[in-house]
Length: 489
Image (spheres, rainbow, N blue to C red):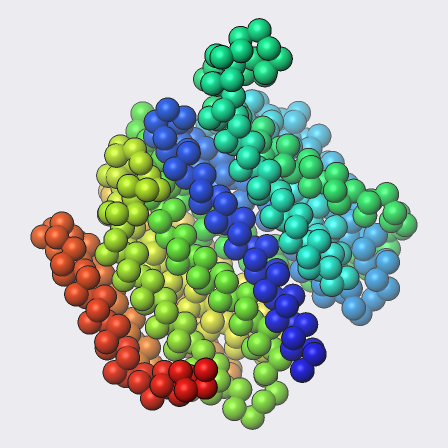
């Protein structure tokens, strides 16, 4: 029992450390979309840079974090720590030198100002240097210290954003002869966003620097070769995931005419953030349930339990989908206060549903994790990335960011269906497909009607009735289990 208690405690803490930073970043959306801080075009440029950050974060880590955990318990622990740390340290330093020397070329190739390229390079390097120190904390079962640093990083970043973008301009005006006015520069809002990121990343590196100072700098070449052999497929899967997740902004910048690209990207990126409710639910669920999948794999009724879990994930996800879509126009007034962004609201149901499909895919992926066929996950992610790239190239010239939204839902939907098909072949699980498709299909239908039929969207009466009807539909179908749970309580 103590094992499960410890597992639950660590899962809860790591889950908090993952979900809270996303919530903090969500708080920044109203700030970034405030016309007094950034206009739509400037927010589009910030979104493009963050997309490149996600992509290069995967390349600079090159799967070494996953490889670290794979070898930590099977090889000499000190050798694994030192070898992986040295590998990432020198690859990061090499990247720093090469990227800084080629910053003007990178600026021209990416259509981003060289100054912002420099900031991005430093953020990438500082984040890469703390990968193994963070992994070491997890391997040593120090979840509280891990969570405090993770949450502290984002809290500091949030504070610095508020300071630089809201408070500093006012302080500089009220005290023009003070020191504070010397660090204020007009029209430097984008720069301040990345300076805040650099300071937060540097603070995190300083806190984790004892890993470097206390480490035995011994590099095991043979171990490194084995770790790289294991990590490279992970990197490929990570690149594929990054393409699915953020590459549409980069493609929009390349494909759309220069005079409208960043404005379109800004509107699309802001409205995309409304899918965060679904993302947070799916992430928290995955972090909590994934250890359970492994710990119960040897149980006699394991597959039946997995099927029930997936069904209830679909039920709760369907409710979130319907509620967020019905009240999307209310949420936008709190989260995206500038009406110039609202033209992209039409993508919201598609993006929420796409992230729902991704969550279902993660639940279905239990089959290749339990059967040690993790390469299949890489192949499925690659298929998703190919669909993302092809459809973006085909649809962006026709429908702009709406084409990107269609590409995203097509990629994640395809990954979900492929995983279900292959799972039936390699690790059959008795999913209640009738109920799963029933709940999912009804939620999609009601969401679509409430959002895309103008009269339904304007009155909210249909949407509220749809939520009540859907809740009753679930209760009627799951009544016995729900009553059993209530009685147990």
